[in-house]
Image (cartoon, rainbow, N blue to C red):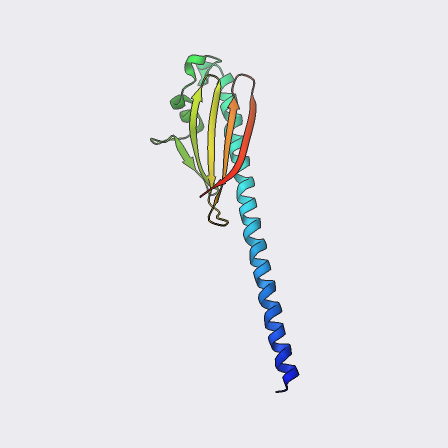
Length: 141
């Protein structure tokens, strides 16, 4: 085999290796981003259901706009969260009802995907009285 042919084979292997590295990096970025977006969608669903629960009359299982009903246990039960941490999980991650105080509830979600040793994390704050929902997106180890 000639020197030129060996050089072309080595060059081809280097190009293929670089392409595979870039492709793997793009795949990891995409799966992480998709997991983060799926978390945001599920957290938004929980937040909307929490606002709905607050406005539904007590007679049919809601809080009935009554501040006395705004407890972690009541809201967690309505959302389907359970266990000592008032949590639930899905194929996208785990969710926990962090707190209910005043007219504000907080729900956190931690994703399953890992990028650089970190998981996607979303903390949603829900104002039950006016229905506003805010979310902070970050990552945790």
